[in-house]
Length: 370
Image (cartoon, rainbow, N blue to C red; front, side, top):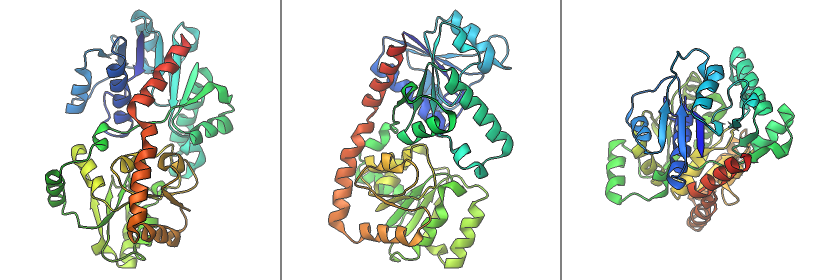
């Protein structure tokens, strides 16, 4: 089978959707090596993880032959036909215009519709563009992949799509989170980033929707033995968080890390006592999966899909309840038997997101279209 992909993110993004795209295609290429995986992108970024991705034997980069303008939206169809692509997968909310009038079967992945649920977090023009692209893709694609039941419900509710057209296929995380690191490596990582002996971890862009301010407020009610370690890109919302830290006198208890090498991230997870994720809304919540694979108890927020990612043995509180968040964290750190149970049952639960299972579901989805 020849499968084509919208490779803009895979060929250019080093985090987020770039990692998702490369991981998905790599696992397919490894598990089903008999197929050809053609990755279409208007350009390619020079970076080690991208170069390594395109060195795989049955993964091939396809660049535009006659200019990149409107290529991904329209002119790509000529290339797909010439390359005899049978299935085209738009990995992030869009597919080429008029693909429904060709013989090529199409799938689109919808990660979330947060721009409609929480429009205040987006610029007006961005909201309009995101909605037009994703709604159009959902209407025209042969199949839609939602990355959670919550996202599926949003597509049905907000776009009026019939549920039978939508397949829920969860994401996994990078395999590096699934193996415990040796103590020597952990010691190096702790020394490199001056990590405390006991800490609560939060990973994610520091933006309003991720709700870091709630974790800061909760920290005031948690033993001084524990610090809060935050890993993520800072946005203008960081100033709001800083004001709250100063107001509560917590400057010495919070450590901000950014630009952490990806290879060190699993180790930082594995040494944490608790992972906290108080986000108002997510499409899925990959950091929760990463924490569970690393054997870290999770405390997350209600209201979106985080219960799907964290499972029945993680703890959940309202994203508006700082006191409730503090109580939940204290419940974990003060109760070793509960910690042990959350680690063991969390690791057991997260096996449903193993790459081999997710990859098989995705290939089954492709095959049913032919």
